[in-house]
Length: 552
Image 1 (cartoon, rainbow, N blue to C red):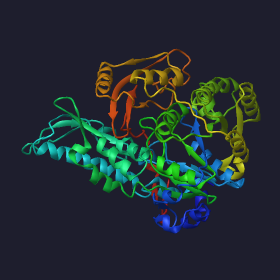
Image 2: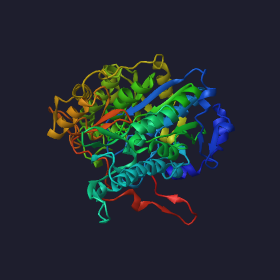
Image 3: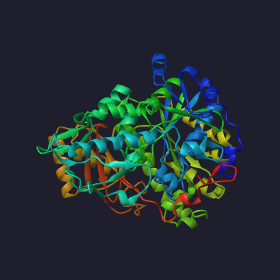
Image 4: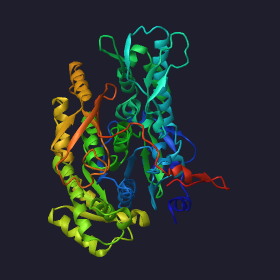
């Protein structure tokens, strides 16, 4: 059976019944039908004195077109911990419509390790991302309305972009104000995908409603004639934005196919944003469970670094253990094989590809300071000889390995992984890659050299000027959020092995005073992705029974 058939073969429990097992009562729920709900943030007042569970971070090697199954492993691991008698809860990101209709597909796991209802989660879910789109574009409308009525704030430059939650590359650069109405001045503008909106970052980093409103008010939307920042609060828009986002700030819950609790809230991309679910959902889950399994987007060079240096630094969270996910097929792809060749046994390619895994594991252990287990998402094409080779290689490096078969077996296929995670999750440890007092270039260069393995960083003239301006404004103590391709340690998506010296190329720097970090754009990275030649949308339809088909 495929993922959809498996999901449909299992009768879901009412979400109120699932929540009850984990200590969430009906009075704490805001239901969205039978199988999904929001949990009112006010529950944290009741949970204030409850002991916090242990946080487990799931990350991976650099992703490949073959798919590594990081979310599938996360779901299977949480189910496996529950199977061992522990109260384990998932804390994941919400899927964006961009990849659902594009190339990557959905983000609800696979096989017998899924969160459900899969089609609803992958499409409109509870409307959080739509709320962000509306809130973001309300700010844009108020900016242009302000300009139309005389520009009292004396905007010289508008940096706030519109957004939509679809991949539409033609909207990267547009012109607005072309109606030739009185006082309308044409200017260049553009769209980001919604999950790259600063409002998404603020939602995921805010600690409560008041903190959210404060951060929204602090967002820089442009600069005046004295080159000073103009904020959302100058437009008096923060209250209306908060009103639009009020319900969205309550974390969402669904269930795994084994009827265990899953928080899914917030969804910033990790290549162009900070890649972690909301702090509010994570902290709520930690008050309700013995273990909370969370994931950071893409590889450990992107999502895990931002999880540590941004999310953990801002929130005080500390993971007790980490899992680095890989597949033999992906390792062989990183070892130089074509996609079509990766299902065939090839020890030479496997050996070459292991270097990518070892670099990620070294970063997790020695840069982030977190104990780690390698989880191999096992496929039928994996040979015993290859598994033995990898096991021996990792054993020489002192790295723990677990073979996970959660796609076909659910929690039963994660017992070994769950046991190994519990064994190393005895202490909460974390180490930041840079000191927050470092200047911005030092922060960038520490990530580039320590985490990516680059020999240095090169800056465009524009990026140098932007960094200088940001430091003059007094924001040098912000963390940095590096926007970089997910496919490579370098900023070149085709440089998979990175076996020759390379540099990171910074093209643009963007100040985010609401999210309270600085975005560093490198290489050819776009905050509005495009669709592939054959988008997944071509194969999605509604069948004669009214069921959605084709989401994968």
